[in-house]
Image 1 (cartoon, rainbow, N blue to C red):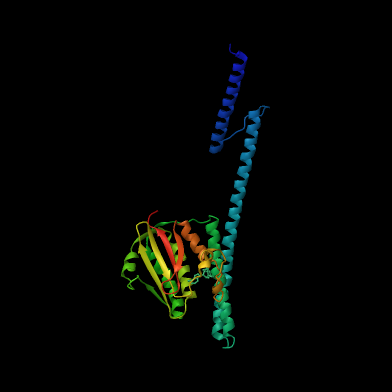
Image 2 (image 1 turned 180 degrees about the vertical axis):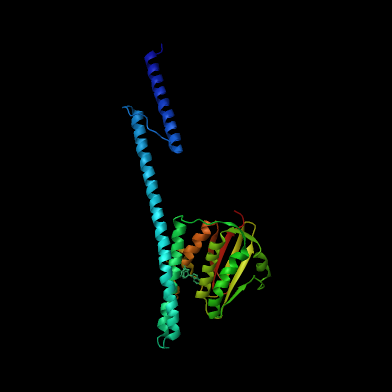
Length: 302
Ligand code: ADP
């Protein structure tokens, strides 16, 4: 014979269980829609659960609000630092230029030092504000199809003057020493944020010129593949030690042999971050003529 009380008890438990599950389902759905309301409190287990759930949602909202407020504060601070330092740095550069013209031969090296330090400060503040903007999500990159030529021309024209001072030639070349294939590949398309990618390529050219000896050559090569476009920047500088290759992309890392040059160790960190944000990447190899070769890969399609 069956036990009618046992079955009834089991049915009761089943019904209670399914009531809890269906209320939990309701609670989660309304929480996701942002409309969760606690029912009137009573001493039941379900009511205690609702109360805890309400508490959890309130804390989650508060912490999301805190993150939003902190992000806004960082945004304002970064914008303030960037704006407020612009004028004093521009003034220092202007006055040192005037001073350089009027000062004695003996004092000139000191004035040049001030000018160089002001330039260094300007670059550092620019790089750190860009990094902070990207890291905090204050700005997002806007990848769009563009011609590879657009990505190269501006940074090349910006570096020409400094390259000229060191009698460094900047050339668009292929493996056979001719530029025709690279020129053709410059017409191909990549999908990236033009302004930020120009900044990334500019950093590589900056380094190539900075670390290369006088009268050397910096070569830019473009290769178009099905999925990626590759832009290579090769120099005849000191190259990069095998054991330092992974570290040079870290923030503030400077190579042991690079300390004789001005720098702050943020250029490659920013460059890699920009490329990662547009689904590209960067790597470094030995250059064919003893120096280093940085290769940037950019996706062809979004
Ligand atoms: P910085 O040049 O200000 O030191 P970067 O982040 O641009 O900072 O570069 C990090 C390090 O990578 C440099 O300190 C240097 O050791 C190495 N490096 C970068 N580019 C080159 C290059 N073209 N030739 C030799 N070493 C380089």
